[in-house]
Each structure stands twice: as structure tokens, then as C-alpha cells.
Image (cartoon, rainbow, N blue to C red):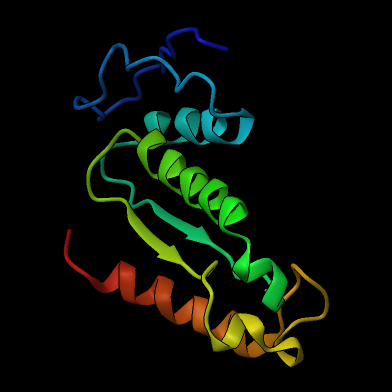
Length: 130
């Protein structure tokens, strides 16, 4: 898990390093999987990290310890990319839409209005210059 990833060079990708920094220790499989993907992607690849919305009840939104865990996870994911220019679209926030049960099928599956908001955020991130 802490091995140095050595991506194979691809034709026309002279900017690819022979070696990349080691994986992020102590952060879990998802963070390290993202690290592997990010460092293996060609330098010209646009990366957008999306934190999808989840339905928040008053109790869940008020739990400070859980909120800190989530924020630490988001920070670890952003740091794991190991490259500049990664756009982050964070919809896992405490706002009117994530407290509105009508916008969700269940706690993690959202309806079309939120999906369209996410699509718009991704499109805006892609439209911004690097």
C-alpha cells in the first residue's frame, strides 16, 4: 500500500515522471485509489473532484465530530491528487438543498434538480481556463 507507483510512459507524454511521490499513508483505500488514478493520468487531463450531496437531517448537520471527519476526508482527497489545477466541486455541504428531503430518494441518492446542479458545476469547472 505504501509502495511508490511507477506509471508506464505513454508515447507523446514526455511530461510524465518516471516516479511519483508515495501514496498517502493512513488515509484509506479511496484516497490511495484516487492517488493512483491522478498520477497515472496524462498531464493534459483535466481532473474534477466531485463530492456529491447527501441528505442532511438537523441532527446529522449539527454533529461537529462527524463534520470534522468529512472535512478531513475531503482535504485528504484533494491532497491525494498531487497535482495543481484540480477543480473541486463540493456539493456535500449543509445548505437548503441538502436539508430538503424532496430532493432525495434516500440519504445518498438525489433527484434530478440536484443532478442538474452538479452537471452545471462540472461544466463551469471545465469551461474555466487552467
